[in-house]
Image (tube, rainbow, N blue to C red; front, side, top):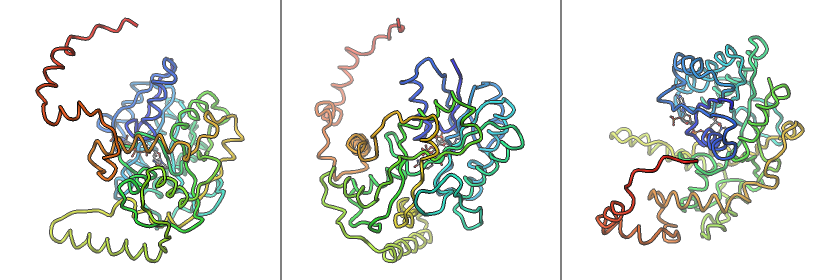
Length: 373
Ligand SMILES: NC(=O)c1ccc[n+]([C@@H]2O[C@H](COP(=O)([O-])OP(=O)(O)OC[C@H]3O[C@@H](n4cnc5c(N)ncnc54)[C@H](OP(=O)(O)O)[C@@H]3O)[C@@H](O)[C@H]2O)c1
């Protein structure tokens, strides 16, 4: 049995990798996933001590500072942390998988792995730190014997995104009926990355290091998707009336965003702290086509484990999962009435908790038998 380490194992992508090895490949890899409390990527000694002590066969970096983190946190976690893992991986002579992002790429269609943005001061903290990490990892592969693979993701979809970011923020805005019109331009296309497929690619790349070492790959579904069509499909799955099929021009949307920013600044003057809703931070991207070519990956030895599965085919299951989750967390109320809870438990927990305590104490408190399997 191999040992692997994933940093960011509580996140959307890291969590999916941990779950894959637990559920789909039991007994193949012991996947360790220290939390940021145990091993912070801001602390070089934490990284070194942990990796030298556990001596894994490979290491994956799926950790990331918040998207709106300040320059220092972005630099320390996304760049220096990534490089300190690489230095330890090079010392241990183990493969290192680094997740990067389409934020390192310009707008355009069919973008190749080589089409990166030039590193410059105007980039967002996130894009800048990812580009810097990519560049230094490639330098270390050429000069320090690092065995690494960079996997660039676009808009990731999948269950268990507990922070409600990216695609799931879009889903949330529609479910919450807080998107009255289409904040995009007709024909704006994007690439999407299927979270469920990522662990299969990682597993294949671990088994075939010669082919994948020192390489960067785009991990996206081959067919790009029109944002307006996706929004309207989600709306029809949820049987909602909004958003209406009216395209809001970027100039209007941008003015709205600026007005909100001014209000937020005024609020700080009276001691209230509020930040821009995450969906508005990426407003510009809703109006720009950015599609990534997946040809390099699909012409390698990797084969798609779920051919034909796309963001569209996954929608019914994801909608079911997220609506239940958000309704239970009291995050959405509009759709709450359509969701079926276990009615009896719901009512008893609300009105008669003592009867639940009595029932649990009567039937379900005996010490568990040791597992005989
Ligand atoms: N999700 C997307 O749409 C998307 C798109 C493109 C690229 N990516 C890339 O995919 C990777 C994973 O993203 P994700 O969406 O899975 O992220 P996520 O759900 O936000 O999870 C972030 C993870 O990073 C960990 N983390 C944060 N600060 C840390 C620190 N100082 N030290 C150690 N760990 C720390 C968190 O651990 P704790 O909970 O323990 O703090 C958490 O497990 C990132 O590299 C991201 O750039 C994601």
